[in-house]
Length: 172
Image 1: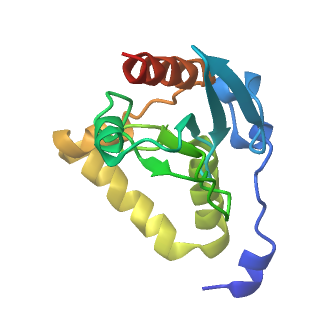
Image 2: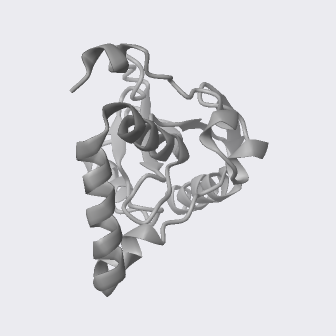
């Protein structure tokens, strides 16, 4: 592995560097979209791979019965975050409890992640090229595995609709 090549690796934080796609009309990597729906604050942001994640704030004094209820919310990919802090925060806030989901599952397309993998293959060479060739063979010969390559990008609008759906369920 060429460590020097990795040190110069581009970070692809601007979504315009991810290639063509619906993400070009959306906010970049570092954007945090804050909103409120039915009195519940929420945040939409991108994860490392460029996929959207959504977090809803609920009363932090909720008991564990409600936490169990929140973990069963019907949201894309299921609830993947529940804590008294957001993933990028170090300190907990016992007054707020955050429930979240992400759009980076096996059937989702993560544009920044894909661009990084593509660039890694170009920089690091043969082992990654061989892996790509094996993936192409698998895709052609295995119908079950082919579904993995038919992933779709989940837009900001999709993520916002999921947040609102979560809040509708919490508010029931």
